[in-house]
Image (cartoon, rainbow, N blue to C red; front, side, top):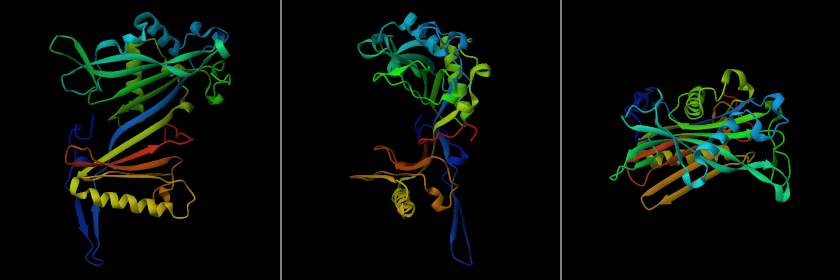
Length: 323
């Protein structure tokens, strides 16, 4: 769902309230609160039983192996991807737009596997994705991205996996072995909402017993991968906002103690995009955070609204979901 597709809410309203201080002559403006947009959350499921650690990967009862078995039994060939696993998916969090939604699955070569040298075999990451279903003029089903996105990545986290170089797979030892799940979605108001969507999709495809969250989820490993919010504003305000982003960059860049990632791109019609990313926003009075935050201004090549987007990008240390 793009910002233009989102339903109007009071926080998205254009009528801002300004208050003028009659003594100083300054004007204090109250702006709308940003709306949640894209978000991603990572989980580790400690679903590898100690009694199965010595088993071959295909003989382990983990969510990852369940997903691989599903692919082998139903998809079997990459040419059949994306494979429609659930043609008529329903959930309380889907858009109420009268459309049909499906869950599709595919796989992709992963960064680690088993074996060494010529005997190395890569593992395959499993993907679940939400798609909208409609029929074309010939009655054939067509898949398209809908107003709400969901992408669930399912990966192994086994101590006996290696990279193609032969080096062992690196992951935080304190989080244990099992299955790693990363869910990416839009228009979710909390990390728990992101997780709920992932769990609903997993159970819909692989069965109600595919995962036991209460038993297997390692709560210390729950991490925010990305958090994004946006504010829409009228196009005539775009240059002023871009100027404010540039001034912010110059202020937090003073002293050169932290890397600043700044990017601007002009097109014939004016500013297409301005972006600055830093972990030093505390210099402007914001609370210090253990991750970097990006401000981005962009405008579609068609349409009249510019968008001001804030993205928290996680570098090195990913914040716990509780934060």
